[in-house]
Amino acid sequence: MCGIVGKLSLDGRQPVDPDLIQRMTDLIAHRGPDGEGQHVTGPIGMGHRRLSIIDLNTGSQPMCNEDGTVWVVFNGEIYNYQSLRTELKAKNHTFKSATDTEVIVHLYEELGEECLLRLQGMFAFAIWDENKQKLLLARDRVGIKPLYYTDTGTALLFASEIKSLLVDTSVARKINARGVDRFLTYYYLPGNETLFDNIYKLDPGHYLTVSNGQIKKSQYWDLQFSISPRWEKYDDAVEALRDLLQRSVKDHMISDVPVGVLLSGGVDSTGVLRYATEQSDQPIHTFTVGFDGEAFPDERPYAQLAAQHYGTIHQEITITAADFCDFLPKYIWHMEEPVCEPPAFALYLVSRLARESSVKVLLSGEGGDEAFGGYNKYRNLLALEGLKSAFGPARGALRFGVEALAHLGWKRIEKYSNLINLPLMQYYLSCTATPNTPFNRQKHNLYNKDFIDFLEPRVSDGPTRRLFEKTGGLPLLHQMLYVDTKSWLPDDLLVKADKMTMATSVELRVPLLDSRILEFSASLPPHFKVRGLTTKRILKDALKDSVPRAILKRKKTGFPVPYDRWLKNEMKDFVAETLLNPNSNLRDYFCKEGLVKLFEMNQRGEGCSQEIFSLLVLELLHQQFVEGHGMP
Image (cartoon, rainbow, N blue to C red; front, side, top):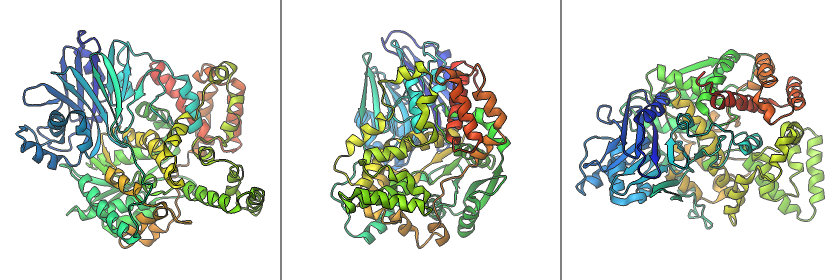
């Protein structure tokens, strides 16, 4: 796991400044504290920071082929590199290291861009082909590893983190105002835009080439759901999944340093731990986190149950409101993208605990919900769609029934009463683009006039709509899983996972997002994944003989962080000073009265904690990256 940076002059003549590459590389030293390297020649400069995981002694980058005509900087892990290495040696390629990095170089020599189809793993890399004067940037299928780029008109720059791009003075520190509204619609930024004008994410499953000054982006992989399911017998699919889980976790355990497991006490992380223990002749280190203060859902008892069941070396950390407030500026610095993810705070601290325990690689259960249909919204919306079909034209009776249930005390059903007459895309957006939160119901009353005028022709939920357009003909569940796998997963969950663990110089691996598992799940009929009230049906059945029943049957809670209480109480003064300051950058978008009203709503406990946290994120992003305050 590492960090990469680079710059290519588009005219092919302007030399790259080695000092610039050095400064870009230095800024992401946390991604690779074990070593650094550069390759700067003529119009190309590439930099690398190394976190040594495999081949600790001879894996330095940038790395080249035998005659120095193909160079690579690479961030990630290729889990099938050993079989690829054997294949390439049989074709007379010479290796000078035992790393997965060198496999990429030689596989590119054989296949060009098609090498991407052979790589199993998580990756973001850049290849410079000296003979062709061609740059290739590539990102893994799901978007586990980040890669950003910008075209200044005279050069293309790329990096693992946005902050490295901003080192070059030709890259404008300008906010993408459309991204502000989109962030406040989704609480993250779906799609390839960032909060910075002209700085983009390379989409998952895509590569970008630069040749003769021309920039071209192409897609090499997409998640394809089967229209006609390939599996008829459920028990056969369960056995096939067990085999895939065993193989994926085994591959993800490849390392020359200790590997641990992030343990939440949920089905996904416990399932990963179950297979990880098979691959180690020593007890696995496991880590979890809890929170100090009043009673709220606590993951620790379930994590302790899993740790005891599998005989792990288990450690916990307890964190407080003061910890949260102190960390917030660091959260902004490392995340760079606007993401309303308070659980990232816990991930950072538990990853730091692992690093302090000499564990440099962690496995997590991230992705199980998107692969197997784990969110409650899936079953709820499937149930609603079933009721709509059953009632047919008698939608009025259905609405009456929903309202009656709400009156009897099922308050959660109220949000579905307005969705009865809407098509899937519209009511799914109600869950993903959050129009029914207190903020989004009235955000245009909070925006100032200039910002409203700017947004008039814009469509903030465009990314989700474009994804839905690709799902025509798919079953309802598969439409939702596709959209989440292409948006919520890479642009919220995985960016959080990468940035927070790399901030502590720890590598996070996600076995449930192995492309073989995703493609297998996409081949299953929907009812293998969600049936009635049961979510992740096939995954739970695959684990039922080896995971404690209390964990399999527990109610899904997510990862609760009591930040709403902290923002209202312990952090009240910090919130007021940051958001209501007359010099706040938020005045570019919001009227003063709107900010005051939102603050007061939150103090009254009217459910505005996501909005308050999101506005804090925006203000601190402005301060650090636009005003140039830098690392906190």
